[in-house]
Length: 125
Image 1 (cartoon, rainbow, N blue to C red):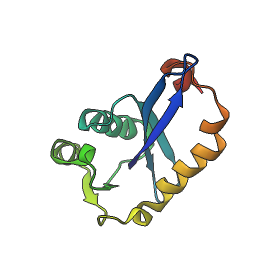
Image 2: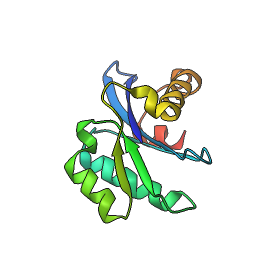
Image 3: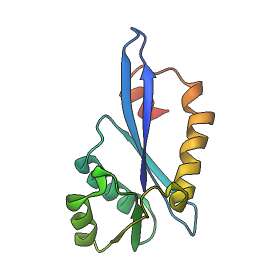
Image 4: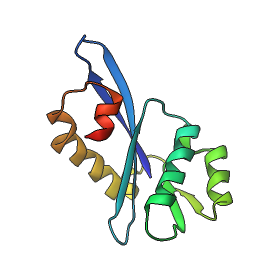
């Protein structure tokens, strides 16, 4: 599980910041993602619950970086859900390579091709 910062400019020229939370199963490659307007533990917890409901199998382990959104409350929520939470080594994004590659692909093949109009429109796309 990881988060990617997104920057858009709306039609009025205002800068818009969004955050794409992404999870990919190592074995099947099944992917889930959601875009949020804030980068925090509440959204990380919401996203974990979304992934648990979306994936067609039980999640045993979640691997994240050491970001502030994946700290104490998120960690304990994982454990409450019966999911082990493992941190990758600091400064080692390659250890979460599938998600990192997914973010690059999303940027190249999706985000640069769309025009931001609203969060609702972004979610539909």
